[in-house]
Structures are given as C-alpha cells and as structure tokens.
Length: 308
Image (cartoon, rainbow, N blue to C red; front, side):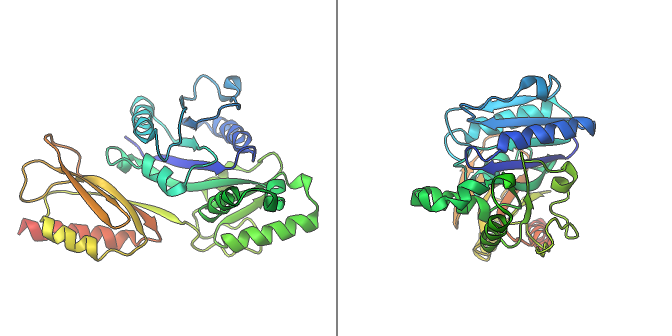
C-alpha cells in the first residue's frame, strides 16, 4: 500500500473551511489525483456532491467531535477509505471546536500509520471575526487563538472585507501567536494546491515578512518494531522523553510475554493492555519538534539489547 497524504482543515464556524475544501478538490481533480474526504459534523453546511464527484470517497461523522466521542468511528472509517481506495491524499474537515493534538491522535492509528504521511494543519481565519474578537466570549477567543497557534498554514480569509491597514494589523497580531506558520491573505479561501503540498518545505515562503524555517508544530513519528524489547528498558526510555511528547499508542512485544501489548501514553502516563492475538508492532509518537531519527535509533537500540 502506498503512502497517503493527510491534511487537517481547521477553523471556526463560517470561516470558509468548506469553500477551501471545494477549491482543493477541484484542483486535485485537475491534477488527476485520487483523494478522499472525511467531514466531521457539518450540520447546516452541505457539500455539493456534484462538485465533489462520484469518484471522491466521502465519509461523514456526525454527533460529536473527532477528538472525543467518535474517535473510534473515525479510525474505522479512515481504515476503510485506505483499504478500499488507492489514495494520494485524505482531507479531514474538523469541527470548529476540535483540538489539533486530539485530531492527530485520532487519525494516527498504529494499524495504518505507516501508510500515512501527515502533512499538517491548515487553519482558515475569518478576518472580520478575528478583528471583532473582543466581542466574543473568553472561551471562543481562546479557541480561535488555539486554532491559530497550532496551524502550519493559515489562510487569512475574507481579506476583501477589511481595509489594507486593518489587514496589516490583523496579520501582525496573528503572527504574534504563531510566527512560524505560513500566512496567506485570501478571498473565498482561494489557495493553490502546490502551496499546501509544499507547506513543510523550508524553502517555501508565501508572505515576505515570514521566516518559514521550521513551522511544523505537531510531529508524528512512526516506528515498526522488528522484535521484542525488555519492558524495564522501554520504561527507562519513557522516563527520559522530553515533555513535548504528548501522545503515544501502538503495539509492543515485550520479552516476557508471548503476545504483544497495546500501549498508550498520554502526557507522561503510560498504560498497557495485554492482547491475545498477534498485532502489527507499530508505535506512533505525537509531539512538538521531535527528533525523529534519534527516537527511532533509540527504539532500535532497545530491540538490539533485547536480542542479545
């Protein structure tokens, strides 16, 4: 199975996420790429099925947010999309209230993480709403700030509805929250597909004032174990991890057990559950600014030690 790109589309209600998705799907179709869409709780917004086309696999998740009540359902539907289709990319449009760490946790299942290339979070910001954010409740202001802070690519949408001076002031305030993300002023969420595909490449700059050197916030490291490791050595490795590791999950074979363990780790707390069947020995590590090569080499060293 080939590697499939995964993009998370975020932003508050009415910011232009669905318009962005339509723009992207049109360009993907023109590029001849096979893509699928996961829509989470669209409610009053319907996607024009004629525009998407019958050849685009579509899954809809209602009655909850990816990050909490329907995470298991998301995993099942994403697995179905990947196994039933030969996909170049999957676009996940989240609810306005979804937290990026939780969303990434929901899509990086150890069952198929090796087949996914997480590309990043694209956040759409309604410039009018951001300009008038002081009129919102503290909770909503905090949500908007979180969505901006965790983005890798920010569309400053509805730029035609504010003056040039206002736009400059709004860009400045947004870059203060996230100086590393690519920022782009847009009307009707118009952005080129190439810009999104290149958003993690160091040489890519969209706005002259930005220094885009390392703007990826959340990183997903995927490792496949070749054999068993000693649980004591593994727990020593856990204790030495940086605080920027937020989540881990996967299947690990320990030297003392015939079957692998389902392992989960959340903000410093590990949990093990004995499985009674053989599982793919993949582990997914989610955090900020992780040294992927170092982590994988450390895990390989644990295996080598156990083998001897």
